[in-house]
Length: 460
Image (cartoon, rainbow, N blue to C red; front, top):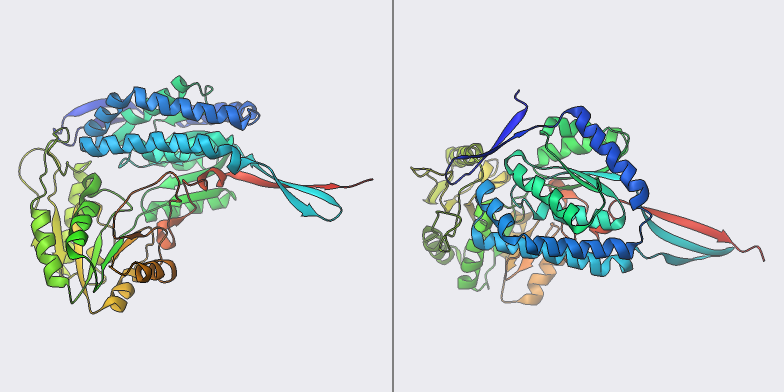
């Protein structure tokens, strides 16, 4: 296999850059450098690490336009949503800086012979393996919390966003972080997997498909190394009997086509009770047909191209398999002619269990529309999934919706009468095949620390 990788603009299909992959030895050298850096970095006071997180926020702001251009060029993100991703990353850096002291502070605990201290100590070099769909956010969200905690990081980014990978390392260096505290490794997935067993890698965080995530976790488990996994999902959005249908339609369209439909925690299965099904379907179809796809840089574009041709082809294969399994087309579901890896906003209905549109993750702008008999049946269908990352409920009875969310909906995150991605002050993560561990909200900063108990016996 070639030791080079090319990045391709998914809108123009033109080659952007060609990158030479690092060798196994170069990667191992990077890990050794990260470990040597860690030995000094772990002794830097949390206050100073937090100040550098604020400096990183400033570097992201300073490089706003260049980063936005990379997002649009490398993976086809539309301009408005690229700006939102940048703003989110800045907010994450600031939240981490503002809350690190409290989150990592020593705690005094009762200890009968004297006193005890519980402390949160960094553990070493953390390997990150991250995807392309949020090319800045996915990296910042895990790396800044680990660096402020006192760890160092080496990161394998997706090969179609290697330009962003290099840019992120420059951002960290320009913010004042020590050399080797953060490093982007220009490697393929096979090489990255081999790095898990390296003696100086102390933990692994992975975002991607559930199949690959399980392989990463299995490899890490051989060496008793902790992992955090944020995997795929087919999030269900429930439109209950008492739902505000216009609100549900408007929100569900946003939730399905955001980030060109290539979002783990986005609306994918739309479970609508029999009472509202026809009204919702009519409005949903009209709204999806009005979604405009085109140049990611244009202000009036709603939907950009998919990130790679193979991803679009895979999505269309899933649609075709679902139709063979009984699903019918409401709109879209055909690859348009012309340049760019586009797929239109699409809806399938009569979606059957044991088909991709029901069981799997459709990572593109295709909605699965499912009719439920009543509210109870809708909840049953929503939980009939191997995944559990996010989800949504539409109901005018807020108390009932909260009750369902807290006690019955088996996912890590739930929206009620709205849709949102990630928030710096709230935990992000899932259950079941959507993974384990949490990021954001002060939880991620403690995922890769040694929770150490120190017991002091009173000798007087």
